[in-house]
Length: 150
Image (cartoon, rainbow, N blue to C red; front, side, top):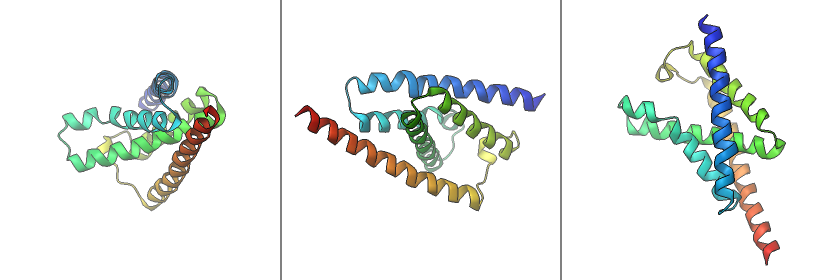
């Protein structure tokens, strides 16, 4: 029963968060700002939105800052997947798979109980490189847009 409830809950969380962070929020940012600002702002807000509970649990500020940065990287990569596919449902599925995979790996316990292994660290570094490439791509897109407007 716990498995089924967790499955459904993580699916609904992925759908709701992606509707907001990759659906509604970027449209309002891109109306006034370029791709780079939209990418960074929505990613940081995604990271910050996931740390409210940790603040109330009085976790160390360094741990919270680390979580914000890792989750912002996730948000950045989800945004990149959305840009690459143009389909919000793809990002919803990716978000669900990420959350559910973490839940299975963590044993349905608290997120503060999770200790990443070497594979998780290697994957995080690889995702960081991909995130960097995405940021550079957004900057280049803004430069091309400004040149086209001139």
